[in-house]
Length: 410
Ligand code: GLV
Ligand code: MN
Ligand code: MN
Image 1: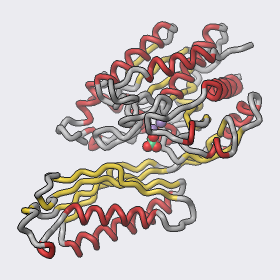
Image 2 (image 1 turned 30 degrees about the vertical axis):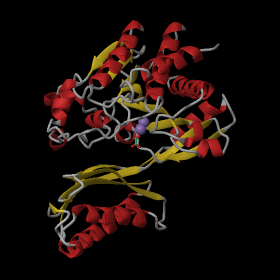
Image 3 (image 1 turned 90 degrees about the horizontal axis):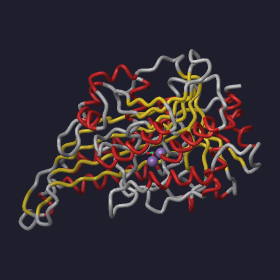
Image 4 (image 1 turned 45 degrees about the vertical axis):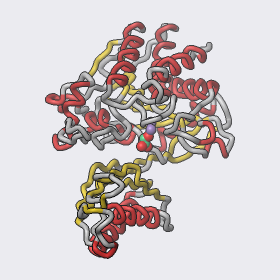
């Protein structure tokens, strides 16, 4: 019996991807009107299928198919519908829409499961304009603190206000907190966002673990001054100091450690950003990722101490702020086996691999066993407009996910 409708799944992905900022494909930043439009589309799909639909206090969108034993903990299938700026068509939405296709198929075929299945579009998985990522899944795991709700964007609007705009209720964020026994299993399908599956000519990947991520905000305070009259040896240039710090993280993360590690400066703001002014202030962000928590700490402490000495040598002020930390996770053996078997009934081109990208699964692992299936993406590229996955791979991955749900809920 063919449960998953390949064409329908593909069409839904492109229908949601098409809800993008015009002229800037494929962009649906969290907490924007476009994001809300995409989620309205999603809620309509859920309602039309007869799911129970809820938007919780963190603005997570949840579609529920009630099981025959509603007191059992639920199976959650989730991911996200926000994108990075100039993002792709598959990151996040592939996982949400695979979940939707699974429940649609189950309903169509009148297959009733013991467990309630919840399809969740977690709010703001990507780093938002408020500096925080995995906002919605943090609310479930208890890692969305009151302090984080006060984080602001460049216009001074708070994350709490943004959550309200997205349909949530920040005052009641604690209501999102899940008990450890409420969720039996969390599953997420995702594009790999890297080249490993392609290089190994595999169709499906079973994720073995997900990197932890440490993010810092760095504030460098120099002295703004006239660029024509201030001699080179009398400057306190915030930008040259910040540039040296940026090169330092590249060098430190590029060294050999027990486990691979990456360090990136992806946000960099120079003030006042005028050609004839010695830069007075720079704010930038550093993120460090590894599957090893110890390695993250080693790289972070080397970077912070080097940034300190660069600031002293160049006579500029330095303030560093931890923005967020998500812990690395290792997928449990029994879940890897469940997914591996589910994949192998469909294709023998299955490998195990770790995830260098962060996911809502990191937060969900604090609440339940988690498992992820990866599908290949063209040229191993993601977080760019060219991001692409093949229809067949999306179909195979969704079938594998469904197999896992059926097996787990037997
Ligand atoms: C999410 O895409 C991340 O890894 O930052
Ligand atoms: Mn992403
Ligand atoms: Mn993603």
